Each structure stands twice: as C-alpha cells, then as structure tokens.
Amino acid sequence: MKIVFLLSACLFVTVGFSQNGLPSPENKNPTSLSPLGGNNFLGKAYNDFGCGLNYVQGSVLIETRTQGYGFNANGTGLPSAITISGLPVSSVSIDKAFLWYCASYQSATAPVTTVNITNPSGGNTIYNNLSPVGISGDVCWAEVGSAVYRADVTTTISGNGLYSFDITGFTNPNWEVDGATLLIIYRDSSAAYSGTLVIDDGNMGCGSFNGYLNPLSDTLADFIACDSSSFANAFLIVSDMQANINGGFHTSTLNGVTTTNFSNDFWNFDFINTAVMPGQTTSFISADGLGSDCYNLLVAGLYYQDTNCVSCISTVSVSESSQESAIIVYPNPFSESTALEVIGNQSSVIGGAFIMYDVYGREIYRLPITDNRLLIERGNLSNGLYFYSIESDGKILSRGKLLNH
Figure (cartoon, rainbow, N blue to C red):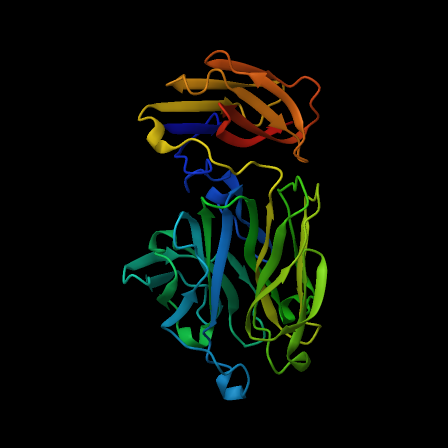
C-alpha cells in the first residue's frame, strides 16, 4: 500500500513507506525546498527531521596561492576529488547532497560557475549556471571580493567512494577557489532513531572592508527539540584560516560550546559532539580569527538524534496492498481548526486514530478516525509547534508537524 500525505493546502507529497514508515526523499520541510543563503549573513539551506535522517561529509583544500608563502601548501588545485565514507550500504535513500565551495574572485563580479562531477560508479553529471549563495568583501588577498557557492548534486550520488570534480568559470581557479565540502544527507530505513538536521549558509567575511569584524556568528533556529538528544553534533565551514596566524589555531563556538584548538587548515570543517536539551529552539555558532586573520564563515549546522519523540518502528509495507490512499491534513499552519481527509482506499485508515503530541513528546489528545473526514478543533491549544501521527492496527501510517498560530 502506498500512502500520500499532504503537508498544507498547496503542497502534495507522495510518500512510500519502507520498514519504519520512512518518507521518501521528496518529503521535505518548505525551508529545505527554497534555500536562502545570504550576503554577509547566513540563511536557511536545509531543515528537516525524520526516522533515520543522518549525514556524511568529506572536504578538500583546493587553493594553491599559499604554496609560495610556505604555509597550507597541500592544496590540490583543480580538478580535485573528495572521498566519501560512512554511507550505509543498504536500507538507505539519498535525501539531499550539497557541494559547497568558496572563492576569492578576481573578476569584476562574482562569476557564474559550472561543476562537472564524476561519482564512484563512473557516472558523470554537469551542473551549470551556479551563482553565489553569498557575496562578501575581500579577505586580504587584494581580490575583488569573496563568494560562496552551493551546488545541489543530489542526482550524482551513488554511494561511498571517490567523487572527482572540476569547477570552471573563474579567471584563475587554482588561485581563487579555496576548497570544497561534499555533504550528503540520507535516510536509513533500518535506524531506530529520529534525526534532525538544520543548516544555514551564505557568506560572512572578515576583512578590512568591515574593520576585521570578529567573531562572525550565526544562530540556527526553526527547530524544537522535544527531548534530550541521544546523539548530537554541531559544525561549521570556515575558509582562509592560515596556518601562519595565531600559532596555527583558531576558536570556534559550536552549539554554544567554545573550543580554542581548531587547527588553521585554510579549509576547515570544524566539528564537535554536543548535546541538545529538551525544548531547545536555537543553537549559537561562531568562528573567531582572533583579530589577526581574514576569513569567511559560510556554513553552520546542528544535527541531533532522539529515540523517544517519534516511534521509528516497523510500519506499513508496500507489499501489503497495491491499493493507494491519500491522507490530507489542511490547513497547516492553522488558527481555529484543521481537518484530516482520507482520499482513495479508506480501509487502512478508518478505524485508526489521530494522535497529537507537544514538543516534549507528551500526548495531547487522541481522536478516533471513524469517517473519511475528521475535524480537529484548536480548543485550548496554545500557539506553537505540535507533532502528530496517524496510526492503525499498531502501525504508523503517517506523521508530521502542525503549527498553531
């Protein structure tokens, strides 16, 4: 049986359920569909949660301009390559994959670029017309300015292994392009946890144009932790932290925790394991050149898992029935009431229950589904975010968020 689930009156999403009721990659939060980026700030690039949601990444230093100065001399130049490991070999679907790169550009304006990437299976994809997601001032190389790019390379991902790529469009790419990070977001249908991932990106520069502003910071938002994390990490990508500055180290704050010994690798994916608390709604991220270095902060992220808020268990199997149903919950957000409507095959849904939870995972109420339409009144609900599930015969048919305002 295939279930179709509508998030709002204008968004219709097909969801095929696997072993644990896991939505297919097409089921995204709206914020993940229209990444924002920003000039001298970071905007939302991705924000989603679900059973088995997780990520892996790989990074590489590309620029060769520092080699003549005797520091950070291991840049590969272009073409380059990134090795990915840690993707599950089975029970996995790719949700999204981003390739970020940052450049100190020498042309009059930040160029439109092209990425040519070959995956470990030998498949080749060319991504054209890639404009910056963020532009900032120069970072002390006498360049015109700095630009950050995000290429959505989801269609080329084929698993673990070597991803070879070239980036064109720059006047002097080996001098201009600092480095690249490939981050792959996936869903593991065999996992017993629910994962949440929030990523902001753009371009925040530190240089003479802004008085060497330090630190550069971002506050991740638009999430609510309903329980203590069972596992969590926070990360950022910072470019142009030079090995010959500040003893070769810089300071980063990740989820409010300050660490002073990140090495200046010129292209850094700074990362720590951390903890997310019940009810937490923001996460503070910053990078600090300690007043002596010019650099770019381009990505900030928070990832956490929980095992108590959402039941990631065996649910409806596709092979149980060839019939199709649709579950529509609209409007969402809502003020006074919202409605659940069953379209198509109703037998698997009618007789079940609509269950709403608060952000702490506490059940607010449970309504029996006795017809193809169920009216859900606001009643005494406070404004805020709620979670719900639709269950029948001990199986979770659908789950999602409801915003009451």
